[in-house]
Image (tube, rainbow, N blue to C red; front, side, top):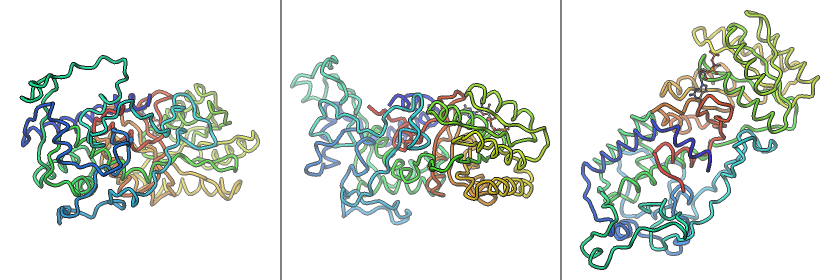
Amino acid sequence: MAFFKKLKDRMFRSSSKIDEGLEAIVEEGGVEESGVEVAAPVDDVMEQPAGAAAELPQAVETDHAPLPPEPASAPRDARPAPSPAPARDEAARAPMPQPTPDPMSEPAPEPQSKTEPKAAPEPAPETPPPAAPLPMTPAPVAATLDDTTPKPAKPGLFGRLIGRGGAAPVVRRVLDDDMLEQLEELLISADMGVDTALRVTANMAEGRLGRKLSVQEIKELMSQEIARIMEPVAKPLPLYPRTPQVVLVVGVNGSGKTTTIGKLASQFRAAGKKVVIAAGDTFRAAAVEQLQVWGERAGVPVLTAPEGSDPASLAFDAMTQAQADGADLLLIDTAGRLQNRGDLMEELAKIVRVIRKKDPTAPHNTLLVLDATTGQNALNQVKVFRDISDVSGLVMTKLDGTAKGGVLVALADRFGLPIHAIGVGEQIDDLSPFDPEEFAAALVGLDLA
Ligand SMILES: Nc1nc2c(ncn2[C@@H]2O[C@H](COP(=O)(O)OP(=O)(O)OP(=O)(O)O)[C@@H](O)[C@H]2O)c(=O)[nH]1
């Protein structure tokens, strides 16, 4: 959970955009209800299935089946079919993929702060309000207060009857087509793309049209639907028994390849792996120097070649050295000049050809590094790099400081490529395994207890 706080803080721009948008949408057509009435309306609008009361109150920690669909209320006709697992029914749910604490793989022990056991179920809050409907609890944080935490004074009977007594009033708005359209627009403005925004809102609407929802409830619902889309792609970088494992790192210039290689090298090194880096972008002296700095920081050798020399020949030498040294991992940086796609394709193909002379199964991973600040352009980059290389997984960088974090949802929805890790800063520990629930919560500005 430690990384979640960082993630949420750093994804401030994306989350505040959605946050502010939701406030405005609900305010626009909503009705204020007194705070003490909070539990009742939620019960009214979202009946809890029998036996579900013991589940955790936090939406994203709980599951993706918060609300039983109401068979009578179908999603809007014009909307796309809900995502592959639309049934909110417990039995119909696909099992959750296991978010691995280690960003990269099972064998490597989690380095540094990544040791946070994210996947472990959160201990249930001590006093989950049994009557509160699950993911729609208006104030999930409150449920996490322990017994020693001073609690706000309860309103008296009169106060409760007249709807006063300290609890803040909650504004709720009926979920209808107008509101859904506004929600779609909001998600599109966060770079989620039209198709994915439609899918998210269609799933949110399923069985819930006509219900009254607060901002908090919408956030919880939205975050569940986003996490549902992202779960299938949240996969750590696979590590194979064969060594050295070769990871080819591709992406346009400036996307964060060098920094990501540095962070990966450092984390693997900290996990006890022997790592070698090849500075394969031989056309940019600055890129090579930058890698050398990261290599020094991480205590990892960086193989370089004279400026303008053949990157394939460097890759071959690096492979030779990595084998001779008994390295576990060889990370190969590559150039990112898309201006001449044909040249880049040929360059990458040649690198692959030469390293296969040493190991016919290499490269074992081809990581595409994408810059979140490019928004929808990242989708084009995936298309291009899939054409010119055998992309096996993604790392998205610079999720800090951009309001375009929604693009990662679009990527997951559109391509289904594994997302191995995300970058939220320039420091070594600013690379984290991708956790869909934390990401979805941070994106919509939801607090996880
Ligand atoms: N805020 C932030 N900055 C990042 C992140 N990852 C990389 N950067 C910065 O983005 C800039 C470009 O990163 P590089 O690693 O040099 O990108 P590159 O793809 O290797 O680019 P070239 O060296 O031009 O090929 C640098 O200033 C990095 O510090 C991130 O997750 N968050």
